[in-house]
Length: 400
Ligand SMILES: C[S@@+](CC[C@H](N)C(=O)[O-])C[C@H]1O[C@@H](n2cnc3c(N)ncnc32)[C@H](O)[C@@H]1O
Image (cartoon, rainbow, N blue to C red; front, side):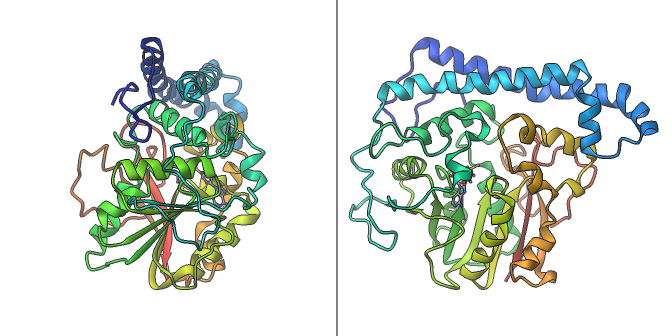
């Protein structure tokens, strides 16, 4: 899908011909970095570094990083990745800033998360203007995104949601599928294939941002009530607008995952995607305990995440950790050092109810046989979590 497609949440957003051309260039540039330059760097490691480093004892990602920093293959890859990240925002922001106040009159907020939304659209938006935004979100320009998820140009602004959506479309160069929802699609359909009799009534997505991976749950389980929470109001306004345009009845709530405003045993599924690695290490146990509390017995918790360092080859760990070092992802590496099994048990789940899945991308497989096997992560799988064609998604979780 080209960058110049109409934005479903803001059909009025216009781009000049130059802006469209820059977007299309950047998309190809990113693909070149993530596919070609990544392959060159890997070959350089295998042929020039690994054999010698073995003698020197390079056994972990830290050591590989120390050795690769000397290599021009790594320096070139890194320089172009940082430059492309910077260019991303230069390319996507001007059309959005032209609109400046992109909030729609339909994106009305309600003061209380417990209050009823008053509009009659399909989706619902529940904002909590007094909610403190954690500094882990407000004080860090995550993935070098100026203003992070929460900056606002005006009241009722959804510009940062629009920026997130537009930059993801370019930066993932098609790997996430035309609706940028491959993770939600793949994980929800995997669950449905594994548990054909499971009929969830309520599903919760933690850290949903603009709802890319929230909406597919409705497609997999059309009768379920769907809820997404996030602390970032601009992203939630955009999520609401996007879901309404797509006629998807989703409830979006401004809420901290550490303090869920839902009763005990309220949900059948608690899901997240690419969320926990942006949560400080000390807060993850709190988030997992909250997930446990709101799950009903028999329910399922699922987190699509970066694979733990212990599950993959040290080179792949070094490769994934790049974002933690150079892309303003301060919690990445501590998250990858965590033992998911132990973290889930500490939240209250029984150890034998823990599971790990490797879920093939539905988009990459162009609709694979949905009856994929439940399987543990393969330690040699270099596609796990990597942004490249043929990616596979790592998921951990537990049944309650
Ligand atoms: C990488 S994004 C998640 C992407 C999204 N799940 C998806 O699949 O497209 C991380 C999100 O987590 C949100 N977030 C971070 N800490 C949070 C918290 N404690 N409670 C709720 N949301 C939080 C951020 O505002 C941001 O929107």
